[in-house]
Image (cartoon, rainbow, N blue to C red; front, side, top):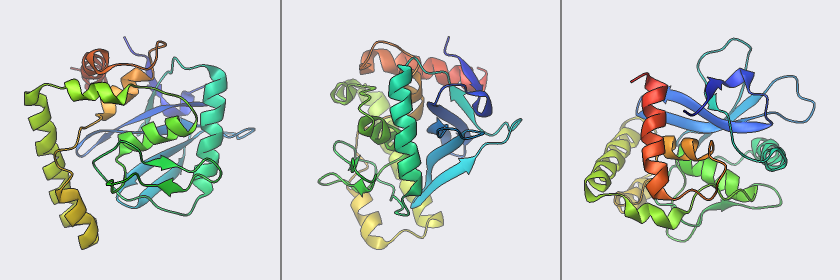
Length: 221
């Protein structure tokens, strides 16, 4: 069973954060800067809203997955979070994710060709890639069943409707997202579950059931 703990109690330099959000599990990165008294949470909270939240002892909003990642790699990831948190550039939401990344020098967001932005889970993946932590083998996500792919397409359309109503997103972004509702979805629970497995990169055939188990554990099913 994946070990899930209150985010403020994480002793590692970095870990994947979990939050119960309106549209399901939301993920980000719990990190601790060098000599910092308490950890923080870096996460793509919403469209053009990159948040860097302080964690108070005893808070229950955020939880975290205890990672099975080398401590040195987590040190690098935490350092990347510090750099990215200082960047004032916000990040748009986007559904399709293959090559969007962060510039090694300053952490500025570099969208991939034909890609609009990131989601909470692909933000985490892009941060891990920047830290040279290859968490999953993205190409294997083509293996999701047609039934589950249909569910993902419905989710994208629901999220797009939600963006139209609440995010004051520019028309150019909404038009671009219309063409991304068939994108492969890297579900937050799958990304979080992969961080608890020592053998990497994790393939979809293992990540999907691990994600379902983590979701059930998170919600107490």
